[in-house]
Length: 56
Image (cartoon, rainbow, N blue to C red; front, side, top):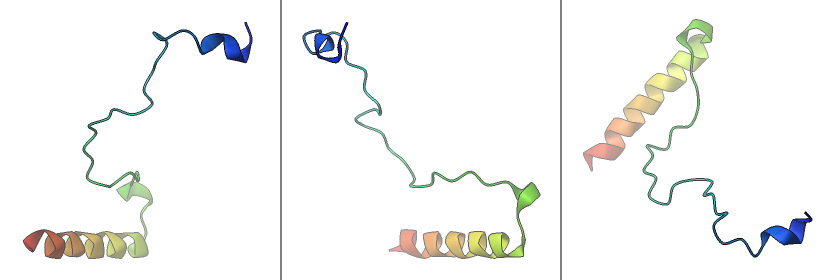
C-alpha cells in the first residue's frame, strides 16, 4: 500500500487535537524539586500577572 492508497478511505480520520479544546494556556511541566530561586520568582510574577489580567 503506497501513500496515495489511503486518500480514498474516508473512515480513516483521526483528529490530532479536539476541536473544542479549552486550555488555560499553560503547557509547561514544572517541578518544585528542581526549581531554583529564578524559577520560583518567575512563577510568582506569572501568578501576579494572571491575577491582574483576570481582574479586568
